[in-house]
Image 1: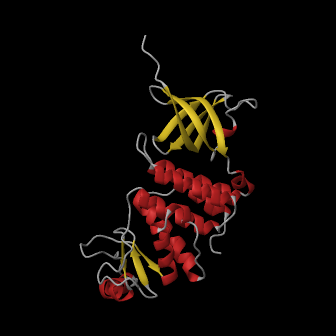
Image 2: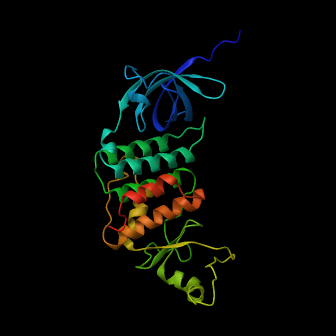
Image 3: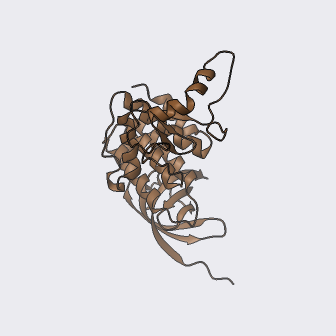
Length: 280
């Protein structure tokens, strides 16, 4: 008879849960060294189960697992953090669900993802403790998660003239991951923009290779914010602010950048937007 796989231990954060029967639960567990794991947790929904807290959505804990043929089995668990403050508002809970869905999609089994785990934990803690506005948390997560997943833009300066300052009407080229200063943007695309706004034409803006592009305006404040999000150490990733017009531009640029590169929207994002007024 074949020997069972040995047990091993890991820390992880629960990104998703699916109830099975009356007592069991499937967990999507994101771990630093093993990546994303599908874990079957037997009887954890019993009120007397020692694994109940560690098998809740958003929980961070220590898990003893055994590898099966198609998924892992939970043997023991202990909770390290439950981020209880997330559930105090529907806005915070819906945002956390969306960001965990993004992390679920952008990670793989058997691939180290320490940076993504750190990002998720920092984000859940910031939501739970109500440390920052939700629009800032959302944008910072979206942009940094996209970069961790390999969609890293070049934010050093204008892709055409190399100027670090883009002016009041600088742009981020979402599709190509580059910046354009006000002058270069006007030089490259103003004629196309004028044509696109004519009612008798429906011509998309295209880059120098004839490919459609998506441009998002960045004021100096919005640009400074996304540069901070991309380049700052993980432990300081939410230690910034953005005000006035920059709020809307920062929020729009971060969401557009992520959604373009994953290629679709999310039901959890739609639900989050249905419960929060994002115009404020």
